[in-house]
Length: 402
View (tube, rainbow, N blue to C red):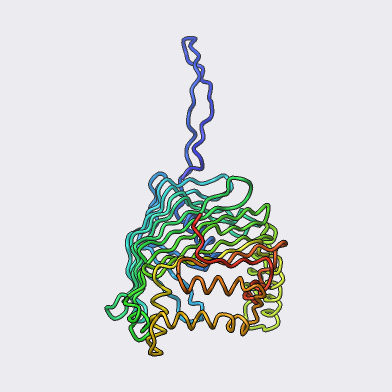
């Protein structure tokens, strides 16, 4: 395909004393389908290692059709690679950039079914619009990132021995450059999610009066590399007849330079190869040092009850031969003991009162953590309950939604 079609003014002197000016197009360079596929594979190699091969690459103008496409994913445990084949993958409105990268107007695939060790995975048609394939996936900073305007996948099902364990109606996502400076904004929504485990693996579901877990997932956020800020504005998991769990998280320290250090360290570990324990340990220590530069600026976790607490108390009471209300009263009495057991200090009983209020009348429960100065992520991960011991944390129950 031609790099952005170029026209140059050419002044032509006509006979009979007539002079006119016209724009004549230069011959367009043909799009190289194999070069495009190689560039896509180079990006995949940096992001999980999924390899894409095609029996043919048919080019027509700005469009490419990959025929008999095979996707091969490496087995992380060192076993045989996993692969599945599609008939055709269409790439339309492909433009080659001056730096050697590509912008693909839309990528579409047909539905696919693949089976591995008795488990069938079925994925509906996939559509990706505005896909940016970077010129150099190993380039420093954000120049190596691949973006897309929108991606749609679905439906998705996982079936074993004729029984469907997982189904997802659709997954929609976007990943676009940030408006102010280097960075990215992202969104992902999974709708009509249903998980149906074996009864023996989730007996509590039956006692909850349910045969499957159904709900949806929403994630949105942004990364402003210049400031090093990552914000998860929304991570919401909703389960029908149970409730909604929501997370808000603010991180600092993830600058473009730090991102480059992570890539460089990961690449050096990947290229080292072998089973050199010393190299592996050195790499892990390097990543540990990098992780120490990422901090939590604020965090909130909330749960909006939609029947979970009552079902859980009824379930607990049934196993002890008492009613759900009696189980709730016992749970409220145990709150101070449990907090003390886990080393949580509650001198003013704010945490105790909030939890007891929620158990008695389950509506919503939230934890908000806003430290005066950002706290290293590793410090919180190593001892998450410790954040409840400071004055930076507020626990509330049954507050009116804003």
